[in-house]
Figure 1 (cartoon, rainbow, N blue to C red):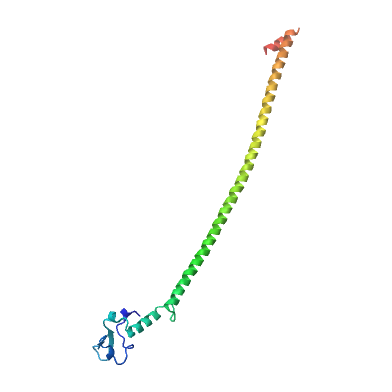
Figure 2 (figure 1 turned 90 degrees about the vertical axis):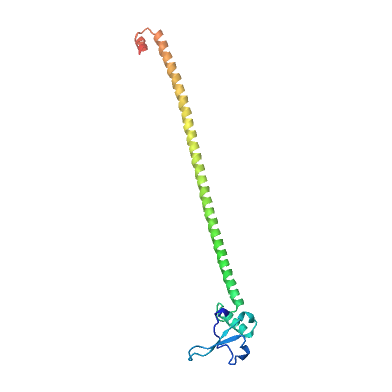
Length: 175
């Protein structure tokens, strides 16, 4: 209950309102079946008044988290809730960071395995290239040798035709 919400205090006012008559005005209802009530006038001028302090205590007790908690207990509960949230957030952040580190490590492991696979593939390709290159060189050498042999054989045939008494070899020359 806030002081601005108080309109009638006939339960809190003593039965003899005369000591407070300058502070409170009596409101008499238009109908006779309602009891008279008292209204607080000029409450801003009498904040230190004992009655106002009683009202303030009642309103502060009713506005806490539980019926018996004080503002200190409410602050402690609120601080406890805040600390609990911070703790949960910190644990969540740690778990998230751990998962992130695991993802990074997994990605790094995958990259390293890819590096190893690519290096092996590269070595295999280099070996194949060296083998093909060696085969090419051998083929070139064989080709060169065969050309030399063909030239030598042609030369031998040519020499044989000139020195031969048979005319059959001369006919081969035209071929």
